[in-house]
Image (tube, rainbow, N blue to C red):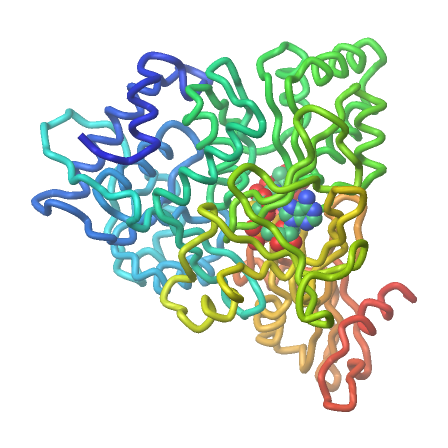
Length: 497
Ligand code: MLC
Ligand code: AMP
């Protein structure tokens, strides 16, 4: 018998449906059985994986859960891998995490054969096989369980390590705040190498004995049809998806639009996060469907921290108050402490939901805490008892469609282009993506470069969502007296153009 919180919960849910598939459903008991078989396969003759990092390259369905739980039940650290990563990006994660085994669906493994082979990773088949009884290790809650790679103010993404106890705290906080029950049904179209899809959608559903329906990717038409047909009770997405839904609803004929709007209106709860939900989108969605989207704020390192209320007024442009079990404060360098009421400060977070550290980066971990509080780098004010996020302290972090991107990582890749001598990457405000990646470049003498050519060249080097959507050639980049590129001035160049 294992001590893992989520597995213990699944034992109580038994034959309830956990994953609703196109051809068949999977119960919580199925997931437990499949994960036990995989855990035994991973352990082989070893009693415990003892924190071995195991990559997961599996489609977001029951197989993914079996792989995640299988790694956990074998005593490993699960590292969900992006299904959109380039060979170079995947290679970075595999090497940084020291991954030597990857649980991989055959089609995904085949399309990434080169980077997998380059790091010598052995493949483990996630498909169910005949069970053979094996004693699985007892895994203590304070052992590391998960590593999610996140971009930041360094050129390459860092691994964010959380323990079983921390994950349980993140889930329990949301299950309580948003009143998850076993009757809930939620669609999954977000990627599972990030916390939004993995914890807020999948893990909360499984914890509560509810079910999720994998949709592989976000396509508005089938999602709207399923909502209209009352297939879901809950809906969680990034702001870009609400923008897309509104466009799709507008394009429907009046009868279909009414049916869809009523379907959205009947959902128990609709949540937005991972980036700022524009007040205009909140208002248009409320007008179209009657749903007041609940906006919340979180981060890979801390889980979810702030949320508008389940009951009571949800204020557009605001992210509410601390979730259960989460301590939040504003901190101002200028004031050497909490800022006066109504003045901005950095959001800092403490509590059981906060991560353990960045993988093998003790300096970066130490630098991200002050007196035990995690420094988010996000700046907010408290207005009438609700936090409002003003922005980020780093200009080098861009949020596009809910993905956190590092301008430094994109710049490093673009500088490999033979036509580019210098470059500066910034995020520009965008109605659909929140922010859009834009690159100002100084070209080498005689060189020319178009946006299409740059995007085509970049496809082998960067995930598609990191590729610039705007390009501007300039004679020189704006720099300050120290010679450092001034990013606000770069943004102004694009605005002027
Ligand atoms: C896709 N594209 C993007 C993009 N997503 N470009 C910029 N930013 C993005 N986020 C590109 C595609 O590669 C494609 O390029 C073109 O846009 C059109 O693609 P699409 O098919 O229309 O997009 P789609 O695949 O539907 O993706 C949109 C999306 C996706 C919104 C569903 O971006 C997404 O899943 N975002 C959520 C990410 C997430 O889970 N973040 C949470 C992080 S955790 P081309 O050139 O190929 O045509 C976190 C903590 C917290 O933030 O608080 O939750
Ligand atoms: P990630 O590192 O991918 O986990 O992204 C976390 C970041 O997303 C936070 O630091 C914020 O900058 C941003 N974020 C998440 N939720 C919100 C929100 N509701 N409003 C504004 N920004 C948000």
